[in-house]
Image 1 (tube, one colour):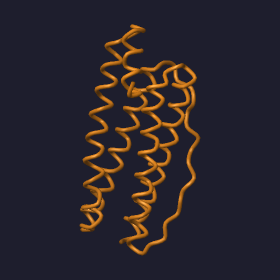
Image 2 (spheres, helix red, strand yellow):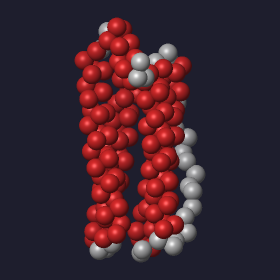
Image 3 (tube, helix red, strand yellow):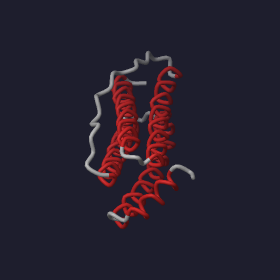
Length: 160
């Protein structure tokens, strides 16, 4: 594994952990605003991002390279509305996707086919994640300030 690829994967690990923290902050906001279903869904996303970071760490270790756990940035903790939270989720997922695609392009350019193959799973995962988030933003936008519609979505997100 080239030092360039290793550095890019280290940056991706940091981004995954930052995304996890951002999701956790969003979940806390939802709990405080009495949206337990949305909070539950966001915590699941936080866990998923941490799992992705671990997958990248394990990949580095499997390549007999040294892995380091990066520090994370403090995420925003205040959001103006539930829709603002999910607009933030949409932007976050788009950012993760772009970083994974850039990492994949780097792997292809360096002819690192093993890393490219590993990244295929992440690319597919991001396509699905963005699809779900776009639908949620559309539904929240359509619901507007309809309390009954938002409460129904909250129950749905919580699995109730």
